[in-house]
Length: 605
Ligand code: M6R
Image 1 (cartoon, rainbow, N blue to C red):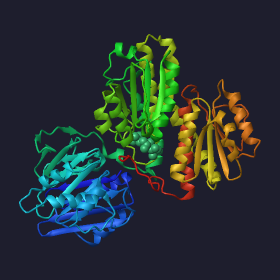
Image 2: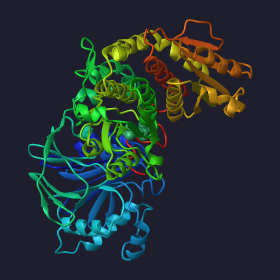
Image 3: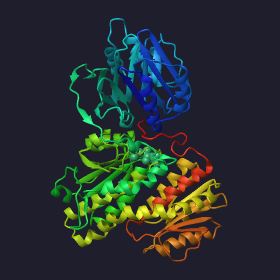
Image 4: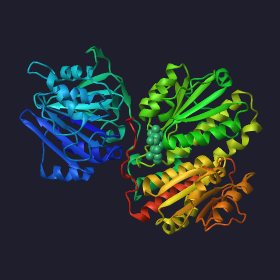
């Protein structure tokens, strides 16, 4: 949520700032701004809307300064507007901020000297820093004093015309990375902005402040004590953050799932020996054997992947109890967990504020936490006791697709490993292992075979205002995920239900403004699924059935997905739903990758 960039070097900063903001735009895109400074003054440019609007301004107001910071915003305090866009100015300083200053109202009422021009909490922090920034104060000291009074979350970058030799950055709860170049230093809230500029980076921890100069970085804490820097290597290649010929990142990310899933499985599933081995769990076989309960947390799509994974864990591990919670809810509940619980923390970005808060709560209670994370080096990945990277590669489109598939698969692999630690024999898990191994090519064939047909169906249903998705058992989480995907990018009001629940209320909705997506597996629940379908048909429903069954199904459209998979077929059917959401949105002409009101990586509560 909100992208931050910064640069101090020996060449014009603007080029990196704009390129970085384009790459971080998926973190927020309601307004954007940059400031570059020199000892005579500053060039401050801000625009409502996308980075392209800002870029246009920079082409009219050329800056040759070698120091600057920039920001792309997802509004929290104050509407999207030029005045509320960052950077915010107070005296000689300029500030960009990601996060929320919770005590901004009290602080604002005390900052009488500053004339506020925005509604933001960020301008309050800028004014607070300025109030400590006297002629004989270093910028870093003013920032430190201000942060000591600040309650809330922040990733910030500050520059001053009084000292254009440095950028001061600090972090508490919102990610910040410092890229170390050969003769320049970069700032980014997400590693993708640094690709092509440097591979060496310092990931700031909470409570750390850094003074970034062209030739180096000094780290200290909020008590002004020095800290030694840990330089890490970023391993993302340029192709991973480019569209590579696709019209949209979403389509690219859907279509690359066979490869990303192969990376998820690689070196972990051994079909010949019928074994799964996840490195990084930091649990001995004895500890795995002793797990009695698994609690899974996540938000949005990650939560749905967790829910699907919970069905697989229950199928795989005899006697294991599993619960799944939305992190945004669990963190405020008076929950109790049985002994020998392990928590699986699911997150694509590894930065989701609710999930992170929940993780910290679990750790405080002494629960062993394992991350199932995509973004390497992210906060959650660094704070869990152990875990597994899903290796799906950068997910740029706001709607999460490939992460879901890799997360569900990783939980399944975890289930196999726990089952084996508890004594399951090869034959007990072999079907799962075989299906895991075949899943990438099954997904490949679904995309190739059904893309056109899904596009045609999507076109036909794009004019509807409402949709219901329903499925039983493992298809219930898939129905929830299908509805989320459709609503977040096409703005069709879509809800997912357990098929058996329709008759307990939701079926009252069925009318001509609705279509229904019925997910049906050719398994022991087939007839039960048909009953729900018949009930909707009887009330004039407009049903699209997505199924792996060749048997007759009475629906307006039947999308038969030819897959030999059984247990993991829900993951395959979900690919069709992803394509459906994409093509409906395309037909409606909306912004597929950056839907309104949303942002990737939700780093605020
Ligand atoms: O980065 P995370 O996986 O923690 O994000 C969780 C949700 O914010 C995310 O899945 C969101 O629901 C997506 N926009 C769904 O497509």
